[in-house]
Image (cartoon, rainbow, N blue to C red; front, top):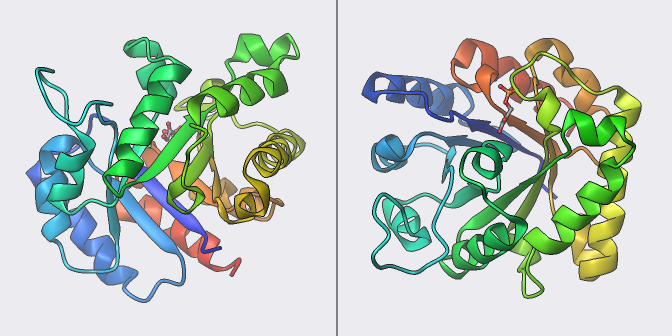
Amino acid sequence: MRKFVAGNWKMNGLRDSLENIAELATAHARARIDIMICPPATLLSKACEINGSLKIGAQDCHSAEKGAHTGDIAAQMIADCGATAVILGHSERRENHSETDAMVRDKTIAAQSAGLTAVVCIGETLEQREKGETLNILKTQLEASIPDEVDPDLLVVAYEPVWAIGTGKIPTREQIAEAHAFCRSTLLERLGSSANNVPLLYGGSVKASNADEIFALQNVDGALVGGASLSPTDFSPIIHALEATV
Ligand code: 13P
C-alpha cells in the first residue's frame, strides 16, 4: 500500500493560498507517497488545475446525488472539479453539524459511487477515553460509518482523537499503536484481506517535530494534518518524514 499524507485546510485559505499548493506540487513532484491537500470548497476547482502529482480532495459532501440541498455539495460535483477524494465524518462535522455515523455511511456510499476515495474519520473524545471507552467507540464508528458495500480500494480511515485536534496534545505512542492495531483488525474481520490495503492515517496535532515517531508505529500509514498543512514550510518536513519510511 502507498503511504498517504493529507492536509485538511478546514475553513482556511483564500485564492492567494493556491500558491502554497503549487509550491508543494513542485517541491514533491517525485514523491514516493501519496500527498493530498483538501482546501475549502471555494478553491477546489482552481486547486485541481495546478499541475503536478498532488491529489486534491474535498472536506465533505452530501449523500444525495443532486437536488434541493442549499449550500451542500454533491460527490459528483467534487469529482467534476477534478478532485479524487473527500474527507467524511470529521469530528468537526460530527460536532458542528450533528453528523451521525449513519449520515457518514450514506456519504461514503455517495462518494465512492462518484469514484472518490472516502477518507472516513473516527475518534474518541477525551471523556470517552477517560472512561475507557475508546476501542468501543472506534468499533461502533467503524461499523456504522463504513457501509457493507464499501469498496476497500476507495477507502482511507483516519483515526483522529478529538482531544488531540488543534490542541497540541498527542496520544502516547502506545495509545496510537493500540488504536491503529484495533482499526486494522476490525477492518480485517469486516472486509477480509483487502483491509490490509486500506491506509490508516493518524490525525491530531501532527507536526514536523513528532512526525518521525508517529510514522514509525505499526499500522500507521500516514497522517491527516490540520494546522501544520497550511504552510509548505510546516507541511514539507512532515511529507519528508513519511517518505523516509518507504
Ligand atoms: P490539527 O493537525 O490542526 O490538530 O488537526 C487535525 C485534523 O483535524 C485534521 O483533519
